[in-house]
Image 1 (cartoon, helix red, strand yellow):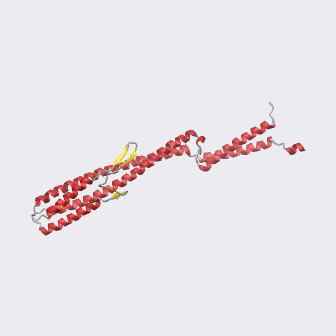
Image 2: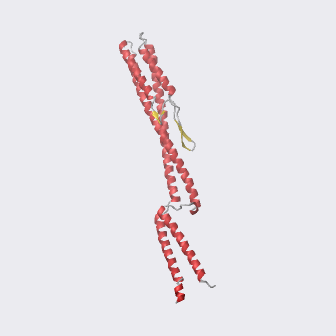
Image 3: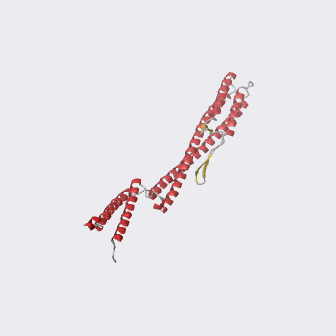
Length: 271
């Protein structure tokens, strides 16, 4: 079959254009570090990339929720620890004042300190995170995984009971009759309140431990999703550079071959 100059030229231009497109694609990959920049470059890879990025975004949101939950729980622990210390001090004072030999003026001084402890616990109630009182306000709930939620607790009822117990103790200490039975009843109530606060601290500590366990799992997932996304999107730079040099050589070879095949010009015919 006879090949005309036009056919040779068309074939040459097609090959050169193909080499240019291949060279451009490899240059884009080398400069961006990504396998694809448009969906049509790798439809399957783009689909996997979208799914992995969705999982990454979801995991990051779970981690943010966990961070907020941990901050809340840690503030709760601080508040409950301070309340425990105040109650233990009140309990020690009440035991000391329950003696029948305690003079009225000494009990009055202890009653004043009990009222100060009551005011201190009342101030602890105002402990805030994100402009919300962590101990007595309606407690939030955080989603930290698929079907996994962590919720805080409202301690208003417990704190109201503690406030009443301390008020009863102060009133009993100031009772002119010196009746120690009321003081003993207040001691029993405060002892029960201490046990209740310690139980709440244990429950809150268990939630913090769970948050840390879930966080460790999510961080591992985040690393794994990052690795999978890198496998889908990122190029092997060494491989791309080798291919780029090969494509450059092919492109130059195509131009050189074309120059040798299509040598006649208008000047050649005029000669």
